[in-house]
Length: 129
Figure 1 (cartoon, rainbow, N blue to C red):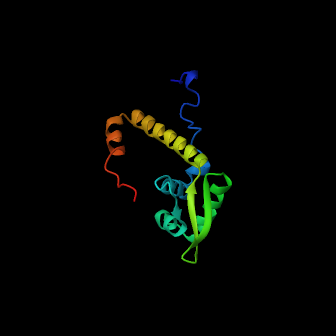
Figure 2: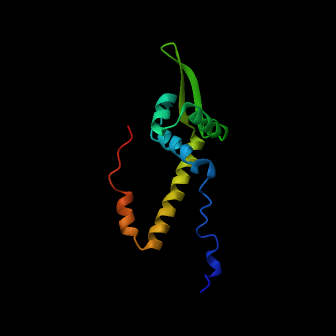
Figure 3: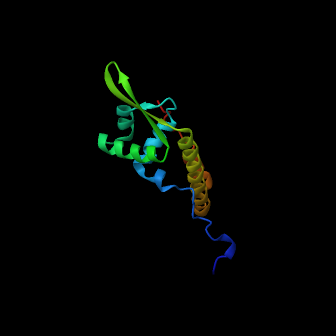
């Protein structure tokens, strides 16, 4: 049985930005949103499980999009880079999370498991440090 014409694009999720959706960049943005004062490059690298070069490349992409800001300076005479989410990056990331939440709700509803999935989604998650 064909679907009604009124539901075209219902599950296209235009807000799933490919810039954010890439696994490493999603990890970077999640880490930075949990640390509003920013993170030193080595700490961000460890949280995301990335190499120096890989993290540098993803930060460059996010910086070009004006999602992150990199502040270079010194800590005890050692070079240090602090990575922070920009206001634009925070807004776009939170919008992206809203779309992801809609994806989960739609999938749960379609699977007839909305209560079960809602319970899993709100389960005990470790707090960011």
